[in-house]
Length: 409
Image (tube, rainbow, N blue to C red; front, side):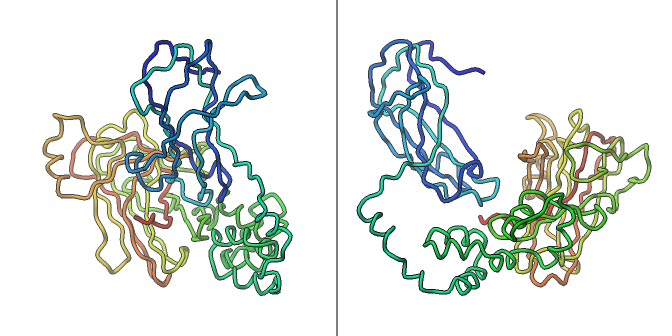
């Protein structure tokens, strides 16, 4: 609908970010700037760069420098200039991974006014086969002599991500990866009870696996939402607060249960007005994957600034029952503005503090803590408490408490 046009001749920089899951995994991509110019533009040296940045900031990246030398007219009337390539080793990475790109100048120079940029385009690299490729395509792979069933069994002891990568080894491996033997090993043991929750028929175990990754299902009479982490097949759970211990949670003048279309659960909790804010619950670790580090999050939205709660630190704790829980402070909106809440700032200086982050599904989340699930034979508990102020608190909508594998730091 709208595209930017350079009005005056000035140096400029363009930064951007893209989620890897929007692109095909394990694929080499080219990046192009697509533009037009009212008048002829004098070619000047520019700095271009693309890179996959995982758990880093763009400042931590090393940008490749290229000159704007190869311009091509497109069939749609625009001009494109390729400014880099990268391997999308994503698609199975978590939602926090990002692809950053940058277009900026190496030396002081000016673009001519009238420069119009339609956008930045990413598309798979066109591979021109050389003699080696042709020879490889006509010669059998050494793995082709192995029985497909044998290869499938071996791959089933790896991970979903490794299985998808191994499909590129040879045609035999590609066939082996499609086998139900592989994907049944990655599915949870109770997967047959989850199939009726879907309104479609699955033609393979692989199709079912990716459905469980992309479309969470409700279990335990709608009290829990279950799905799999795509890269590892690890179990993820979100608990509804319907069964949680909420102080004054059954009193309609303090809390109410509402239905909204963007929630996974039929009813979710909305804080109307309380002085004593206290939520606690627990879960048996059999619902989670063994030998896995988990992070726990509260998933929520706020209304009207979440008065007397949003910008005030809240005590939270997570831990296995019988062990000392990890404790920290979280904010539902953010810390107070400078000059306010000096006592609270002194309190948080010595405490681990978590600020909320936006999710792709439109909700917010704040991490409550982490724990290690060793044998799936324990109970995990959490608490969210704000009782040290006499003010009435309101404006918090809680979808649930989410357990998912912790990110590798």
